[in-house]
Length: 52
Image (cartoon, rainbow, N blue to C red; front, top):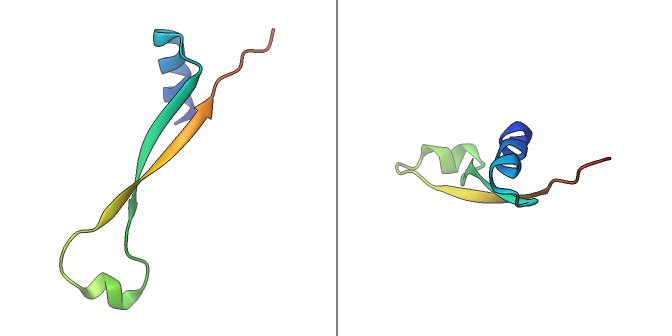
């Protein structure tokens, strides 16, 4: 994810990058047994700062 953020920073020049990471919306064994798909997107904000 860090490599993708740095690549996007180089392409766009934007230093604040938001990446969406899919996560499972169920945690326990009883919840996992219920049919159907649930998931959420975790928004990850990365700030690219150059040293120099």
